[in-house]
Image 1: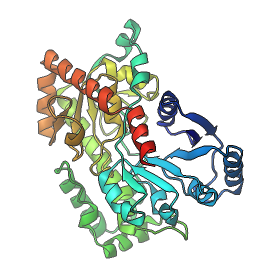
Image 2: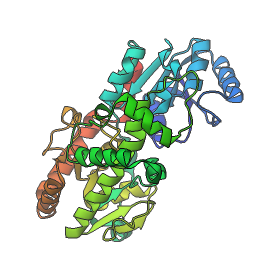
Image 3: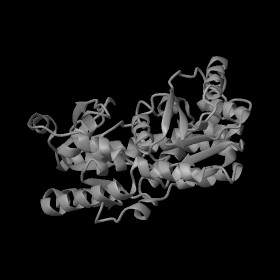
Length: 387
């Protein structure tokens, strides 16, 4: 099939591009960046011209659903395939989600269940995957071991700089701030079920919105105020607090290395190693770490973030928080180790640091499971067969 791949510098694009070509498809790149995900006349005209100059185009593809591309594909009557790898994703609230030419794949089952009724025959659940051939090609040298060897590592943000709640917290009335604090403290004691959205009312969310003062979504969007408040404000604050509290607890007992550009002042005993390039440094860090950690961003309610597949696909040993979809894809204790509280996590860190053979066996089993079942090649073949 000839596929027009509209790219916007997502970290998944390189792996997806390589997989499509391995599967024998012809990939035509559109690399112009849109000024708006909704309206950009120049982008729209260029995409239309590209499709018209390739009359044998089988579909247009993007990472994450983009309304402007949905509009072009509806006009041209060409299938538009998107794989949304972020949660939340505001573009899914666009009324263009209901176009019959869409084939929308979502990483999180609860996200799928929320949006599927808007276009029942054209929205699907599809977990993330790994570009395992690329990770296999990255070899670790003796110099890499000197630079990256560590007991416990995490590569990623603390979410402090991504948390909109931090910008408005000081302006909130005490009763709203107190309720948010209580919600976060309660949610942080529960793994595998996100109840933040269920715990606020539409009226409370509208009251919160007065202080949040976000830029309104477009006129052709369905603005789910409660969902936006729960995910992008409270959810991201919950993620920030979970990472800070968890990393402080770990660093009180163990040596932990963190690769991040976030401000690590709240976690003084963690060894901040600075930023890490996702394509070159991160796989080497994974391969050189005895224990790799995953703490899922709370707005991903049931699904598995890309980090899980990257760690296991690079052959790393992984300890992750529990997510409802993990046992559907992996065997806990055989492919991956899960924890359900900070004390449980600390106990498992201590155990697996002291049991090299068990740790290495689990890492190998996880790698083989990803290689056999969860590569980009497999996922993309499933998607294209479904359309």
